[in-house]
Amino acid sequence: MGRDAVTGWVERYEHAWRTQDVDGLDRLFAEDARYLRSPYDPEPLEGIEAIRGFWVDPTPFTMTFEVIAADGQDAVVRVEVQYGGDKPQEYKDLWVLKFGPDGRAELFEEWAYWPEKTYSAAGDA
Image (cartoon, rainbow, N blue to C red; front, side, top):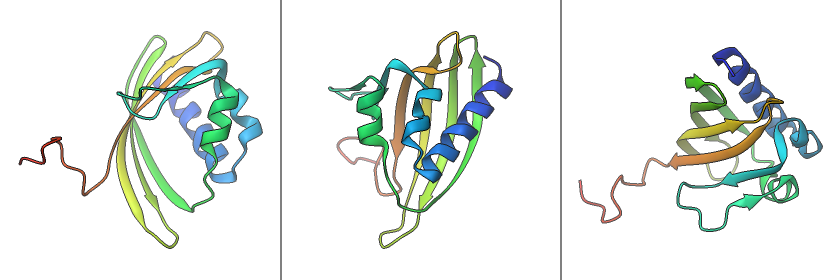
């Protein structure tokens, strides 16, 4: 997939997330997709039904993104999200994606960071 196709996929993802269109997730993810909430996720979500169950979040948000790389079926996207509501929160995220021949994600891996999260487990600067 090229950058334009990946951009379109992320735009559809954002729209589905914003409108809470869990029924539309099957247009974004393969039936047997794996969704890792972190690169070290010991129990990734397996399959579209598990993704649907996790994915719902009605908190208002803004989102910006940039496709960093698109090479064949692989892509990396830099994402920034700011949640509104009672507890404002922001994070910066890298999405590592692998797409199937039909353009749906077979693998979705998140590398998310929050402002107060240090880059080191020990908290060393």
